[in-house]
Length: 422
Image 1 (spheres, rainbow, N blue to C red):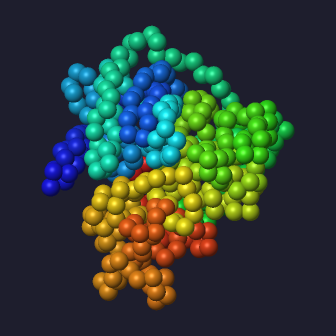
Image 2 (cartoon, rainbow, N blue to C red; image 1 turned 90 degrees about the vertical axis):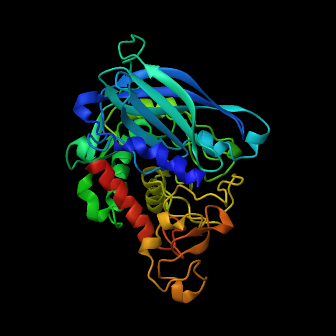
Image 3 (cartoon, helix red, strand yellow; image 1 turned 90 degrees about the horizontal axis):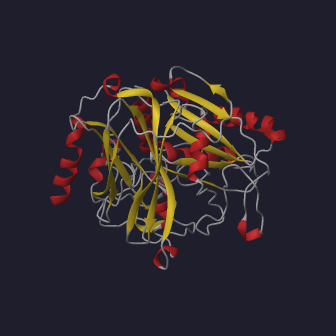
């Protein structure tokens, strides 16, 4: 009961009627900070504050009502103490805390939050979920918008090109695609890859039905080296974003800890979502909700990797597989309902896809062929075989054997599309 009451109180401020034009300019305030700690501690340390030229987000949905992500921040107008903006997100640090390394050492990760640029001074509160899934306030910072240390400098200015433009940024889902490991001579390859992957995305439901809700742009930013780091093979490439396979010592997990370079490149265009295309045929990728998504460009499974990872980064979907090895320990607490919309521990299943189930579907759903094409509650998901349940026997968030998202994933994607495009 305490947890339910806290959750209700935490989201009462969502009744705010903040209007964009009253509080914001159509630019971005970017706050870089360091997130440090070990497997059971965390601290926030401010790095720098920047002003960037574009804002790609909605002018209507300023308050995040999804309750997704490991972390959350709220922005208050200093004069009135009114909540004027909020967002949930996740980070590499949050994942790293569940690894074996976090049990033997402390580490620091660069992270960023962005918001529309405020007209007046603001206060920002940072929250982190505890092991019971409850948000706890961890850090607070006040921004004086007249502070001359707010930097307009941009270290990675490059031109962008349009891949798909359906309307104004504030009324669309704006995706910026960043090139990683494409040399100057390979910029033509990058342009072709962007067009190819955008085309492929809209062959899947529900994206194809909502194609007119998207803007997609690419940034023409060449690297000195071609490809990505593969530490286990002693391969090191000089690239703009410094991506690497073997993130957390998982071979296929291709990510980057160079957060500032990612954000500097993304600032060349308006964006809601950042997608990094890595110029390699090696299998891999990764994504973190409202952080960034990564896919390789030329592996035979690259197109499905692209769509799968976007499910994580954009819609907050969890991995539904449980047989592949990962570097995580106890990623989900079995006595807590996960925040992701497509997995459940049955602790609070009423808030998930229960409303989509047909009446005669048993909960949990037996692993029997007669249920394989039906939406159900199948045990196994979130990297574990027992105690976590997924909506479908197979889905693009589980494997690449099927070519579609299940109905629960589709619903989650549609809700997110509408949130950004209203």
